[in-house]
Length: 193
Image 1: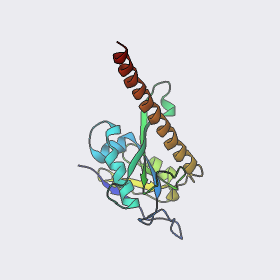
Image 2 (image 1 turned 90 degrees about the vertical axis):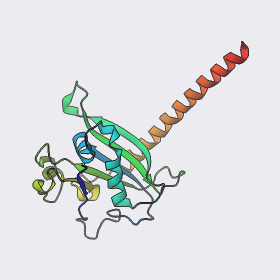
Image 3 (image 1 turned 45 degrees about the vertical axis):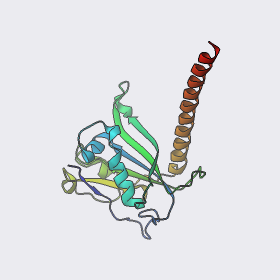
Image 4 (image 1 turned 180 degrees about the horizontal axis):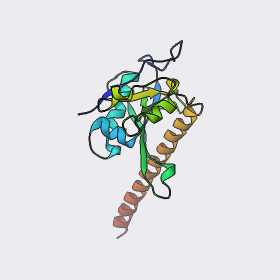
């Protein structure tokens, strides 16, 4: 059974405008989570197949609009300390909430799923400016924290996230073009025989 998603109230005074944003606010939302927490939040299986738990976090913060939350990027990241091995450390997904298709630099909301069970809350204690009771989460909840309530400031989040989406769009266009070239080549060969 999936763990309950827990998003704490904003600790800023006044509250950060994107924690919880107005429903009509267009946002590009990126959620990163340790691969183990993504699996825990959804059940066993490959971490890349656990997009629904990230979408639950995005929906909880941005609201739910039918046909919304368009996935723009997905990625797996590797632990630097595991080199030269390539050990997957976390999964990330970026999706758009009401972002117009011609907006190449929308406002962003970075959310991190904070690891609790595998390190007894050490990362939470180091990365969050507020106390977290690990036992409140162990086996029951997954903590999703927007950047505004983390010690990291995220000054480059907007650029990093939007560039990542642009790069994914470019890769997708190239794959489509390559597929079309292959199809045209087959058609040309059949016409010239």
